[in-house]
Structure formats: structure tokens, C-alpha cells
Image 1: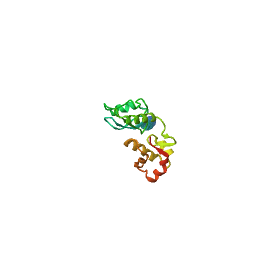
Image 2: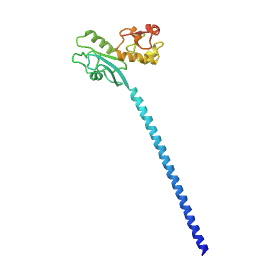
Image 3: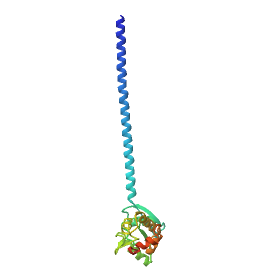
Image 4: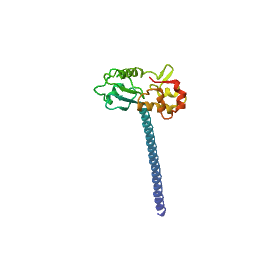
Length: 209
């Protein structure tokens, strides 16, 4: 009878060991599953963050800045999408009743860093300047071998002018966007970083139109 009792206890212990072993396997499987889910979540978050950063960079690159002044209610710098048309920023700036718009080329595509001067009706000189500016805005910033500092892109300024790197080129763009087109080449010295020596080195290579 004692032997039967011992066998029953051994059976109980054996069953308990099996249950403990099974529970251990299940616990390990659950932990591995949770760990895998966390890794997937971290990967998803990282991928989403990278995608958002890429989209933000692409969106920033697709924006340009133009300066609108003259016969408008709200002169200033406007940031619009690349490929926008002139009539869009003129509408944003709210042309005054006495504005002359027919010389501006309202359907043309805007260029980054350009200045739009909206003339008044009867101002023939301003109208002609606006017409010439509008007709040449879609062209290169190089005129007769010289760099037109009112038209040239930052890349053209940096590549064509000795001593003008990307930083100074962007300063030139920012200056003419804020202050309007340069009236004479000497005005380039108003840009921070362009002193007399640097100006003397490039004055024969630049022009204003």
C-alpha cells in the first residue's frame, strides 16, 4: 500500500513538472511575441518619421519667394509654390484700382527671388520697365557675358562670379528680395560680405537690367 502511495505522489509530481514546463514555454513565447511587436512598432515609427522628414524637405524645396511692390495694398515678400503664376501673387498683394496690369505678363511663371513692380496707370516709364522685366524674367541671368545681378539665380551668382560662393549668392538674392532690384552695380556693396575689394574683383563681370 505504501508503494501505491509513493507511485501516486510520483505521478502528481510528474504532472506538476509537465505543467510547469508547459507554462514556461508559453511564457517565453508570449515574451518573444511582445518583443517582436515592439520591434515592429519602433521600425514603423522610425519609417514614419523618416518619411515625414523627407516630405518636409521636399515641400520646402518646392517653395519660392518673390517681392511684390508698387500699386498694391499689401507690398512685401510672398512665399508660394514653385510654378505659381504672376496673377496669383498680384491677387494676394491686392492690386489697387489705379494699377496698370497689362504690361506685367500676368500668366507667366514666377522665379525665385524676383521683384514684381506693379506700375500705376499712366506711369509710362514704370510700365515699360515692368514689361521689360516680365519679358526677361524667364530667361537666364547672363546678359552679353555678364551676370545680371537682378535676374541671376543663386547658382549662377556662385558659379559665374569669382569669390561669390553659395552663402554670398543667397545674401544677394535675399537683399534684392527685401529691397527690390539693384539700381546700379555699385549697390551690390550694400550686401553684407561684399566690400570694396570683392566688388572690384567682379564689377566687370556684372550688370543690372
